Amino acid sequence: MQIAATGAPVNEPDPKRRVLKDVFGFDDFRPGQASVMDALLVGRHVLAVMPTGAGKSLCYQVPALVLGGLTIVVSPLVALMQGQVAALRLAGVAADTINSSLDRDANVAAWRRVAAGQTRLLYLAPERLMTGRMLEALARLDISLIAVDEAHCISQWGPAFRREYEELSRLRDIFPDVPIIALTATADESTRTDIEARLFAERVETLVLGFDRPNIKLGIAAKQDGKRQLLNFVERHQGRSGIVYCLSRKKTEETAAFLEKNGVTALAYHAGMSKEAREANQNAFMTLSGVVMVATIAFGMGIDKPDVAYVFHTDMPGSLEAYYQEIGRAGRDGREAEAHMLFGLGDIRMRRLFIDDEDAPAEHKRRSHRRLDTLIGYCETAQCRRQVLLGYFGEDASPCGNCDNCLDQAPRADGATEARIILSAIAQSGERFGAAHVIDVLLAHGTDKILARSHHRLASFGTGVAHKKDFWLSLIRQLVAGGYLMPDPGGHGGLAIAEKGHALGRGEVPFHYRVEERSRALLGKMRSAQGSSADSEGLDASLLAALKALRLRLAKEREVPAYVIFSDRTLIDMVERSPRDLDAFAAVNGVGAAKLKEFGEIFLGAIAAHQSGASA
Image (cartoon, rainbow, N blue to C red):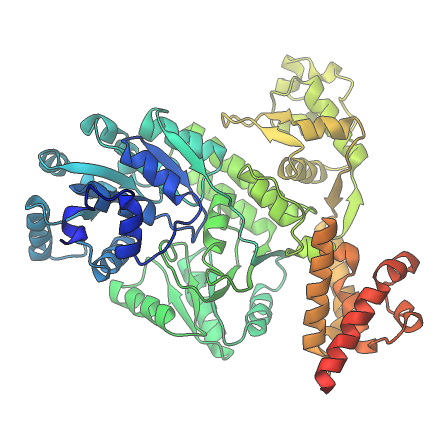
């Protein structure tokens, strides 16, 4: 009996486990998969938010085979559909797709297999599914399950880009007895609420698994000489595959050519290229090692290349969701990987223009601006980046020890006093207004809005005149990113004080902010002048790696950022000096009395063990 054609035998005590093993070759489920499948198998709707690489596709593919009948899979991209169908067929599953890239004869043949009951999973784009003719034809068939892949598109694309995503809300009425599953790797609370309301009318079980990808190092740098910064980064990962994202098609072509000129194997990918050229470049990237794909956001959805060592953003993406989705294409093999972004004021202006020029309702634009503000706060934060990123998706985390702010302390200043000035203004104005209005209060701007609400009479009016608007805006974004302030969940731009913010107001928790860009650039020049020894000839790279690993272990044991133990420059000096006793260790740059006492013997032991191994 062919399981792909008939579903699992009914007498099997756990048919989904048999399908998992017999069809897909896995011994056990990944976290969350079994719970999702069990809900679908008893007819309940499910929204599954699972990190990249968590096995989302199996969550509907296994139930499709257990249930029998036909499962409809809604997918946004042709390449994504074709890749899934090819993989299923290799596993012996009867799967088909009907899409615009196939000729009429191929689509007709696929439909005949569907109508004859031979196909278990049919992949369709929303534009093809939501036509009257297709829906009428499917209504006559035995539909057992509907899966909506990349479901965040319902919230983020529906209003302006692909309106058929909004129309998917009709599926629950057209097929009232069919369970529906929506899946995505990138959905914050607002997006999840949107999907729950639009697709399920809020009658859905939502499962949110962890978002953390701890093997990906997170880093952001001020955009100065972008091409040189990119080349330096790529050369550090020489011989490994990576993805470089650019904002425009023109920049994609220019960047790929620049890398090629400098000896890097680089290919371009964007929607303006011919289908044949895109496919050729994608195939080369997927099959060869050491290839760099320079692309717009047209590339990446559904790409499952395990050995991508890095994702580099030459320009700021549109939101933290987009950023998370794009960096998630790195390190799927579990090896160390890196996500690096260049960030500049020009990016912010361009992103604002994109939002304002979008053909979308005002509410959608407000939400897009709010998402952009949150991303800017992430870029500016002096906190652990992973804490901020996971916090955005509702997940608590300790300092990660694997981002630029943890590994090499960002220039910071104590901002508790300034933060309390902001908190007072927000509290006194009723926690109903956005950043612009709060800053107007702080700077004593007599706007019509201020005067109409008598906010010029607030005690906070004019308390922030010692700083400029940009300073206060950056601090507010960092307070939001750090969880001290909460954006209005309805998307109207208001700011409320979170519990962490109240604790800050009472002086119970600290707040440090990142210093302005000019100071960071000056510090970067000082570091390059002082710390070039990291690349100096003769440095023992294996010892440095061992000391970094030791530092990270100690940091995690103490739940502190790695730089709190020792900075990179201290470790480099340690490698160069290779001290053999505590007196010599005390001379290492950055080792004070307390650290000498707490860490001296530990690091001396690691150095001695390394030297002993090297000489053996």
